[in-house]
Amino acid sequence: MRKLSHEEITSQRPTLKELSDKERFPIISVLDNIRSMYNVGSVFRTSDACRIERLVLCGMTAQPPRKEIEKTALGSVDSVPWNYYQNSVEAVSDLKNQGIQVVSVEHCSHSVDYRKLEVEYPVALVFGHEVTGVKDEIIELSDHAIEIPMYGVKQSLNIAVAYGIITYHFVNEYLRSKEA
Image (cartoon, rainbow, N blue to C red; front, side):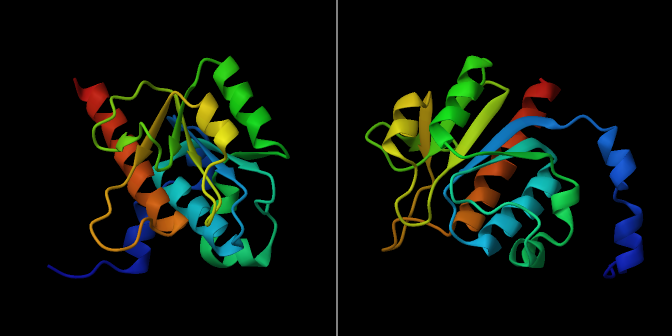
């Protein structure tokens, strides 16, 4: 075994043009009032890796171009479709009106372990503010709420870490459903 060179790894990745011809996974991620531009950049980068359908940035969530986003996004703002809504309730309502299932990532009275939810695609995953979480109005509109089990004293993970766990899980579940 040996470590691959940057050139070897890059040769296995699609170009931006080739990526535009590939089918995207039917996952839409909604970022509601994410305050850290570095977290937003990390979400862009994970979204590229997971080839999600698109990102919906809402409220005070920063939009590209911003050097703080680009620092962690590493060019993925060019490979991930995204749009912006000032009002996240409007964004989620529009998704629901399109028949898209909405799943909030939040500790709620009826939230379930993310690994136990049987999801229907397309799906919209809602991630909320780093401190206050997903808004109550969005929770009320959601079809489901999921959470990541926490085994230590802290009640949550950084948004970028939680986003990676949840998004990869949903991509893998989608791919598994296509194999069946």
